[in-house]
Image (tube, rainbow, N blue to C red; front, top):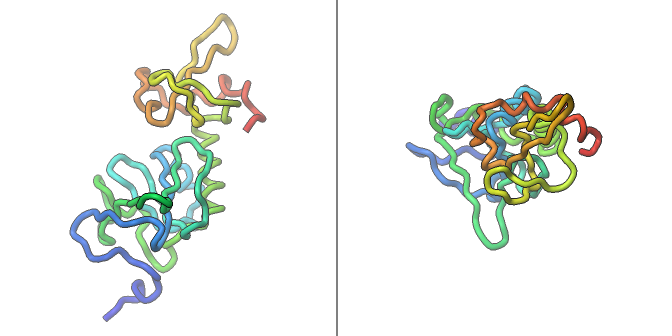
Length: 200
């Protein structure tokens, strides 16, 4: 006999014993956020969040309506949607997996937790981006490690200069976690970032 959850929800993961790669763009699109940004956004959304998957690295994935957005200019955030020339897949754990440390439903599927409103989610992620990384600098910046320009520069350190704000060192989202100082990025978002205020 069907439960009330399966009657109310338009979609539930197929029966599985492990994480299954399911195509985005069929039942839902998804938005991936790195752990620090995702945790802040999840707290901001509160009861207004839909279901959320957390992978074994800590990244969070929200399910959103198909076609509700294609991309957002937020550092480290990715919209997963069906592309014209290839399929995109999301690893979906069994519905009963609600605890880590592996991939699991951080916010389990339920009648009140399925899709998240894309506009509301973007607002929460944008707020988390500013709180975690500071204002977006103007223009592209070079990543300290790969030495390539990035449109998503994350401040990782400040080269101190005599009695005033020094040069900010940036990284791309891939290399930001690898910066050798081990500083948490939010420690750099006050004074060093104020020169960029108002440019976001």
